Amino acid sequence: MSKRTTKRTTEQKTEWYVIAGIVAIAVLVVAVLIQAGRPQTAQTPGLEDLPTGIETGVTPDGHPYRGSLSAKVVVVEYEDLRCPFCRQHFVGAEPQILEQYVKTGLVREESRIVPILGSPSVAAAEAAACAGEQNKYWEFRHVAFANQPLETDPYGRANLVKFAEAAGLDIGRFTTCFDTQRYQGEVKTTLREAQSLGVSSTPTFFVNGVKYEGAVPFERDGGQGFKDILDAALQAVGAAP
Amino acid sequence: MQAVEVTGTQRDRLRWGSFGLAVLGAADAVYLTWIKLSHAQAAFCAPGGGCDTVNNSPYSEMAGIPISVFGLGVYLALAVLLALEDRWEFTQTYGRLTVFGLSLTGVLYSAYLTYLELFVIHAICPYCVVSAVLLTLIFGLAVMRLVWALTPGESPPDE
Image 1 (cartoon, chains in turn brown, blue):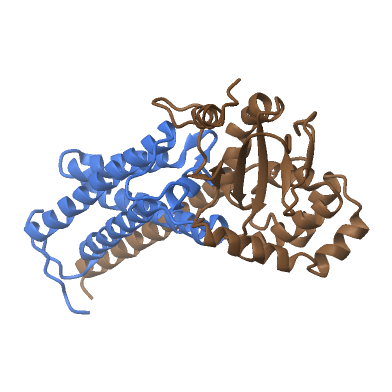
Image 2 (tube, rainbow over the protein chains, first blue to last red):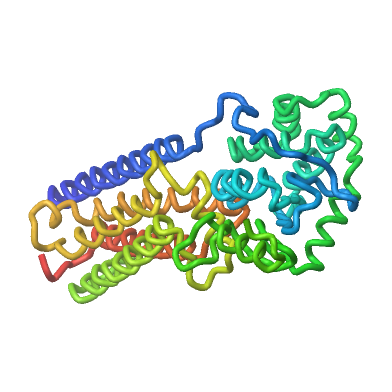
């Protein structure tokens, strides 16, 4: 082997070492980025900011509601507890709708959980129904959204039980209800009902029967924010404030 | 091992092809950033669909900065490195290696983001898929350029 060939081989060896080093650095950088980009886990799922002073209950057809049963405008929300965009509504427009329209008795909010994001969604929906059995539906929903998504498996059984605990449920009754899938049938029925209404994504809202898709902001330039939608609906039924 | 003859023209084609892909990637990242910051509805995406879900998930930001801004930074860096590869001494010597390392980092992170879309967020954002494909192509070209540069028997006519 000539000196020149030996030199070239050594150079190539070095270059491959450099490439291996670059690959190692790239893997390390990505690992750091993944760690840094993980959503922060909430300390404790809580009810600290659950809106209070609002009447809650179950409609005659079995769906949880907030507000007055005699309100002339009804917002029916089809949501999935796992859906990030539903959470966007939960932290975005919802608090203002509750404060300005629901608390004042003008609007009633009804929630229907449609599990469209796989088996953890179904588990979360069944767990929420079990919470409803103890009249804690809104508390459970609040905790579930407040802590979504904490980690890769936010709605595994352990977390759902943790949420139930934070929502103030009787854990013995909750786990019996959840483990026996007591509300499996009801959850499926709600999903079928949503599909028959053309609900293909969450959140989907029906304001007095008119469909709106996505996390509609409370106010939007050029109209069609929730404020405009609700004001128009109230005007239409002659109940404008 | 059979020697691979790579001409200067071929090499330029690969470089400018990569540059074109990086520019497309930058445009895609700008659009994703605009959707994120303006809360606008993405074109060709149903309201409340994959774009919205992915772009509003807690994984779409890092330290309050949209992930697409980091993507934009990577694409711009790649575009500059590729465009000026034969202008500076540093890029002449290390340009290919830097593009390789940067695009590899991008591909690995894109793979993680795609995993999140499929198995955690359960929604697909087409513009994110476009970005992942572009980065993969840039990485593929970077590997080709690097391997050809290291292949014994190569007779680079431009050196």
